[in-house]
Image (cartoon, rainbow, N blue to C red; front, side, top):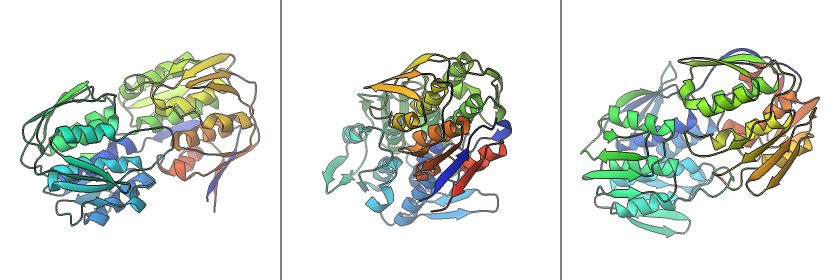
Length: 419
């Protein structure tokens, strides 16, 4: 199992470009199932989750071609199989995103209950209940979701809780349903807007994406399209935090600051200086120690849960005490034990972490427990005294494209150790 060896103490400086967003790309890949023509996706990040999604579609009979410009052309319009087998989906919860498109296009699907990061319950019952309301027959049998429908019918759906993948799944299914579907209490994340924009370019009729109510009028078929994957806002936020804790000065290009405003506001509160353009964010940290910032995670447009672990590191080296409340996932403080091994002073009580800043943290051997925890441990290693070894980095490879290469380009000292 590969590891990262990080020698701390280097300040980050320079300019890097954001990769395409994994959380936008995965539902877009799934949406190609709905098409009657080829779809070309550009700016796809090279990540394990993307590879897994391609393997999943390939196992169903899709053709996937890569051209010389690193664009992927996907032909998913004549699938021979509608089953997502466990061995392909056990590492990735986003595999559930093929459920809605398969039922809408082929009238049936057999999907293994998905796996992924163990950061808390992300129940698929919202997806299943909504599809039942649209006329699908759903059974859970031997670890699989077995679904069928002669025809999906538009209806009014109100999610009990906000769910990003649930919103995406039902929005995709509704594009080929008969009549109008109204999704209430819908997720408002930028990735929802991105998917709606892609579906609209394919001929779907969708209004309201980005608000809590999305209306989809079903059409008979969808055409192909060429679409650029937008930049990854969480990747951008991660590198901005890395610069802040190393007293660095970096510019992240290719990112719309409007998608990261809560993170930017909190970075300003730590004492960082931020400059923005329409497609870039620059950060400079000159203070010896950042100011502590209290954080409460919540669905977009509030502070993202995917940036909570990274901000734990900022607070751990601050000159005060901060409180972090995790309201999205109930098991997302697993990185805290590893950070404490590096000399941090963090106490957890349920969904509340109390972080007392310390003067220095120290390198140690630590173990990644999930994707964003991995990022926090790398960030901690960058500002720690001595060497840090991060184990189980397959988590980081699921969501960050060449993270050690990008950080090294900015002046970090990170070596990937072979298995």
